[in-house]
Image (tube, rainbow, N blue to C red; front, side, top):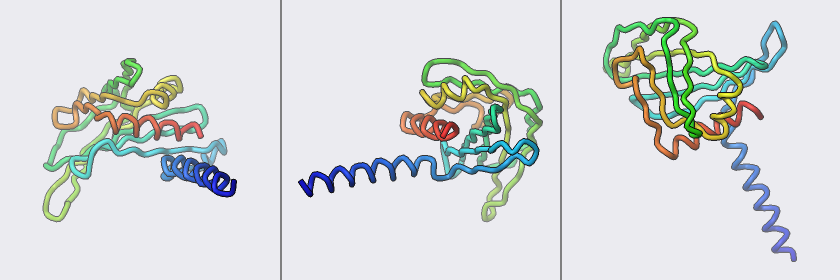
Length: 171
């Protein structure tokens, strides 16, 4: 009986501990005007270099999707405001979003090698965020990019990470 009780308690602890690890790096800030919690969740899709990070951002009922990409080389292309990002979720839905601002390349010196980094933010709907939380992201295309960042097919294991991280936005 004692062993069975200990096994059940251990299973509950391991389940709870594992769930906490998924949402471990959630950042919660307060909006100074509305007192809403601004929740940001980061997920790495590829890396270390080239790298492709996505951020899910929630401020009350406002949702945004941000992409941070970087690769070796010096690029000068500017991603204009309104540039389209298209993604396919695990449910098969194709979602299109437009960049909220222009994105200029940032050149980073990585021990003598140059890396170009872009950060682009897109408006997202709550419905799309919920779809990602349920099914993940399987493909992303940033149409204005003419380099290694333009198309990203996401491996199965990383699709699950994109889904689990999206769930954290709602917790």
